[in-house]
Image (cartoon, rainbow, N blue to C red; front, side, top):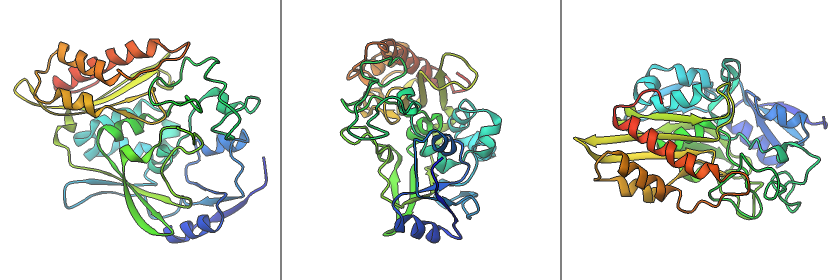
Length: 331
């Protein structure tokens, strides 16, 4: 492992100051993904800033009915919280499907947002990789790409976001609170992660040195009908081939409101505003959900080994929406 200095932040402001003065710094809290990357020489920081003792470990109800999840709240604490289980079951189910209990006990809200792709070409330094070192090429495009993107990819990168939690947060229209050298700001979750474009090395729209301080879940009454459906090669905490987070608000049998996001298909959790808009006012039935799925996948561009994902995603969307329309529950 390359040498680096270790610093323990005394406050959020201290953490930001330390990171801003050394652009090659990385924050660490649970370390469930970062430590693996350090051991694999995927990241070679000059400084590691320990934020694990900062006061960002609370889940608070805000005056407008929103729920604020501190960035250092563990995945276990989120999934077990009574307000999450009652009002945002879609999030609890996503977290519980995403990792073992041991990892959930260490992994944090902020760290989950910053997970990097599990593309095998990114993890194997014997291969070139634009995400690891821009300008080197993307061997996955013409290689073994069964797990890779079918939406929003570019000639520079076809990797997918690995997080289950991110898919649920995208469907819930969450907001990310961050603090940087220029002060505090909020980023809508759908704008937090990036598509690869010509800069696949950038996963998010965070500015250098910015620290995630919290994630805010807006009040969303119909989130109680939320469903998280994850399709994978095995149920033993494998990464998703396709996942869908969905929630429907019905008046009678008519769709009043709807949110859904797809995982395993793109560099970020994938929302389809066109498909959601199509569903408003329609009857909640299989044919309607099938049409919405067609709209959501209309721009799909499968690679040599992942064309199966197009049909699999359509079926997953239809199933998740159907279950949500029946009141939600386990998919």
